[in-house]
Length: 128
Image 1 (tube, rainbow, N blue to C red):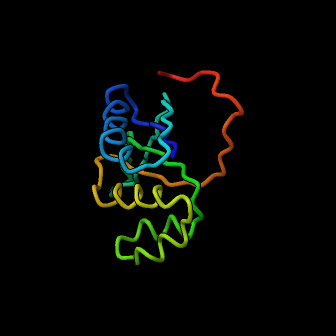
Image 2: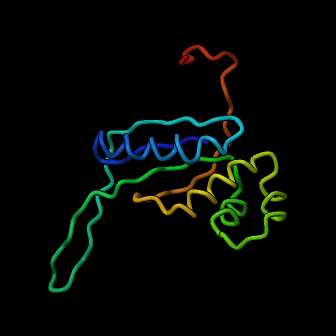
C-alpha cells in the first residue's frame, strides 16, 4: 500500500501519516510506503447568491494492488468477507486496510486507486 499525503500543511500531513502508521500499518502484511506532497487540493463550492466558498481539502491518496471490484467490496462494509477474500486474492490485507479506513471515518478525504507495483531489484535507499 502506498499513501500520498496531500494535507495542505506539514502539520496536517503529519496527522494523516500518524493515522496510517498507528491504525493501518499493523493490518498490512508487507508494509506501507508514504509519500509526502506539498500539493494542495483546493475545492471551490458554488453557494447561494453566486458566492464561492474556497477551502483546502486534506486528502490521502491510497494506492493498492486491488481490482476496482475488490476496492468497491472493501469500501462496502456489508460485503461478505469470503467474497472479499476471493476477489482480493493475495492482497486481502489491503482490502482489510481499506475496510478499516472506511470504518474509522478519518477527518480527511480518502481517494483510492489501483496500480501494479514492481519493486526494484535491490533496495538502494533502505531506511533503517
